[in-house]
Length: 279
Image (cartoon, rainbow, N blue to C red; front, side):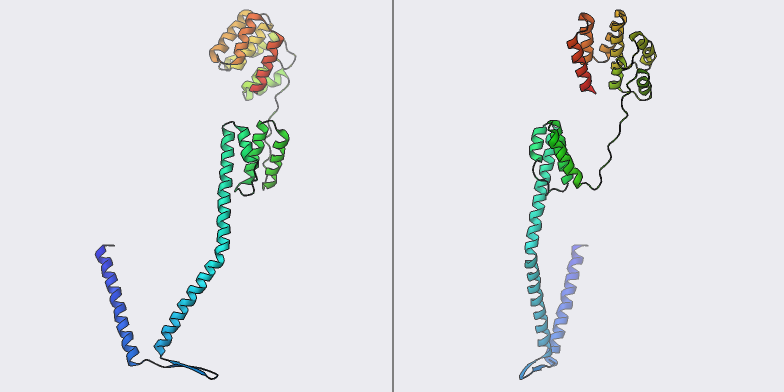
């Protein structure tokens, strides 16, 4: 809408109001009317137009008074709601801070924040889930379980835990499972599960090694089996392959030590611990 058009509209509106005022003034002067209120021994007389003006004025005053009164009546509730919103924002900020410390692998700091009451938060169940995870990382298992129970009590429904297939404890079933779905951590068990001897395992693993040429775990297993069978040349071949695939792997470092100095109880314990950490 152009500025000239807006000015024209305002001039027209003011003109109409002025004309209506002049007409109304002329009517009041020519025929003021008459209104009489009588009750008991009291009477009130006024012109019709004076009554209309008084009625409008009283209506406006009552509307202002009652409107203001209603606003004042709602004031305590508004203050309480504003205080509640402020508490929610502060509590939600605490929840976010705890999640951030947990993501930064600082469970102690996360738990220090998340130990506080979660009743003012928008997602109290999430608060206690994060607290449970922080306590679990700190190996405070009783506290972790207590926080987990608190979270579950606040949840409408609890998802069922995902069931994973257990690792087979025999050589052939493990081999079959790996052919169906390959897992590097499970492949390390091909050396130890079952009763098959080292040469039998090597014979079975050779075709699999061709299909899984990028598997460090399989090269490590073959190297260990070759050393157990006294096949030093083959063992060195698989160690070289494993080193080419992942030279920083600690299990590969152990292989190089074993081929030079032989197997010891200390090396075996270290190997088992590394495998447990990788699982």
